[in-house]
Length: 419
Image (cartoon, rainbow, N blue to C red; front, side, top):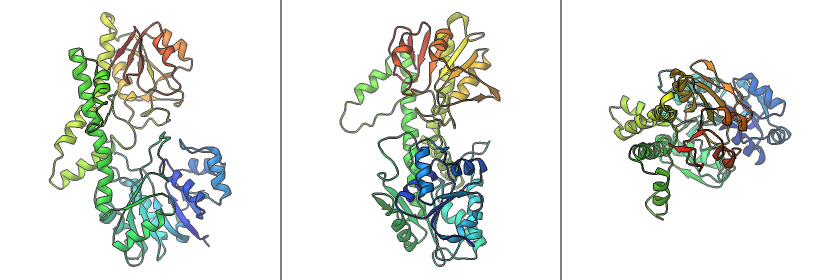
């Protein structure tokens, strides 16, 4: 016999765990399901595997009655089921919905009449109604909008953001039917300050893709500005500072060594891939992708040039900060990987320093990890600041005896060069 729950969260990662935490704080009887036994074991032992969720948070969830397991049968006793599994890319860089399909199948097999199913996993417009709905109906024998309720409510979690979290970030919801939207809005109103109801699931799905594509395109713009400024001898960081003083009509984005993470480099591919199937081409997004994809190679070229006549062959190069974002342990789609591979291909001896990453591989080769930052930057022929973790002392980096290539515009010094 299953135990009744107000909420079951399927997928206990960076999106699922903040939802679990807030649901427990709101007094909802909550359970979680994940296919990874290690994740379940960690949570059962009251340890956190997700950045931004502390061990104390996990303990508080357990004290509130939260349990995690690998058996989806717990769904049978749930009033609401929220699917938070990852939607990444296949090896050919096309959208990979296999985890979502598998999770939906498991939910459908245990879905009870009257339950609300919400998809938070990012995907292309039509996923909820055209992919998730048929699977749920086929395996449950129930009809969406009549026997159970279905909605899409994109996750908006920003790892490492200390200003905005789940509660004070407006929650967009779109229902398969107006009644589905009403049930979904009612559910999230117990957890967040503001709920925004979209016209339907497709509008909600596309809104999430627009949010991250907006960032992707604007990052590409400043990346191209950075390359132009490097070519003609203009300080791109001063250009950004000056432009950013305008109080209207300009939102500042910053260049970098490439675009990484679970959303910004991935979501535009969900958008463009679906659009191509429907006979439409996002020319601007494709151009932005070309620019952003070229940035790791630009960093490699800059590094080779800074090493002078000797070149990278035999040189020691130290990568500083290999995560996709400052102060998080996530290396998904990190530009550090192609940069390391590119430098190694030119014959450089590549090592890295990152307090958040115990190991890193590039082209199947394990990179040497340095733990003594001061000694490492003193030994390296060239250090490259890829991610500006708050633990990095700018004075230490600025006064290091060797060259530093700063891709983040944060360090000032006579031996510092910029992107």
